[in-house]
Amino acid sequence: MDWQLYALLTPALAYFIIFHYVPMYGVQIAFKQFYANLGISGSPWIGFDHFKRFFDSYYFWRLLKNTLTLSGYELLLFPLPIMFALSLNELKNGVFKKWVQTLTYAPHFISVVVVAGMIVAFLDPITGLVNHLIVSLGGQPVAFLTESGWFRHIFVWSGQWQSLGWGTIIYLAALAGVSPELHEAASVDGATRFQRIIHINIPSILPTIIVLFILNIGSFMAIGFEKVLLLQNSLNAETSDIIPTFVYNVGLLEGQYSFASAVGLFESVINIILLVTVNYIARKVSDNSLW
Image 1: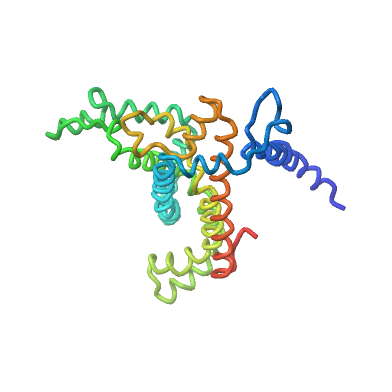
Image 2 (image 1 turned 180 degrees about the horizontal axis):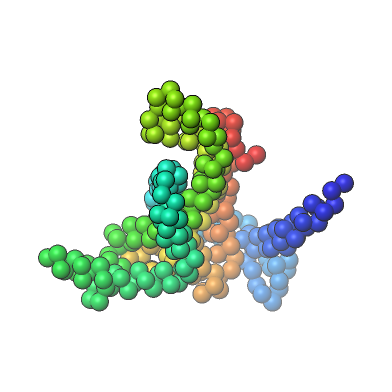
């Protein structure tokens, strides 16, 4: 038996058991009226009351709409790292290629707090660099962060700027495994570079694309709420108020732990349903899936 391999697996397995599976015991407070002095097991069971309260609330549809819209907007840009990786792979100038890779990878290592601060500074209607440029071109200053219509664009595209380069790494690794003989044979047959990308590169990395797409769907509802929270204010709440920030405000700030757990559990159930559904479709259509 290869005990060394199992020994290497042990820390990762212990991590998931301790920090992901054991805490699932606390999920039951979503069905209870939790009191800290009584503990989880001693708190009274109230069934689906918290879920009914959330579904019947006036803010339910706004939260759901904003969460789905923001997640859907991000999902629409899923092909960007693929196209960027395909473009980088075609660069012949090694120095320029490395320079572009470094330039696009760097934002990934910037803290979310710093990114939010940069956005606030650049988009400030008085001192912001973007508004100075707009005014210099003859336009009027725009209060980007206090107009709800701008919030989704700012959030999604700043996220793309931060993650685009890092997201291409896996695709570049997959492209590195494409046999040069396929390209040589296609070139002999008269295929153009674009035709080789379409008929060789993309089919070769298709399994990787499908797996990453399924993983993205699995976290469809779990938007990175930290940046939303940092950019959110009362004037853009119409489009920035989403389920994760609601869970944070209700659970941690207001102390309604049971209600917040119920809302978070609802979000997780939607993610699981989407993950299983998309994985099933991918397996039937392409024979590539997570399981």
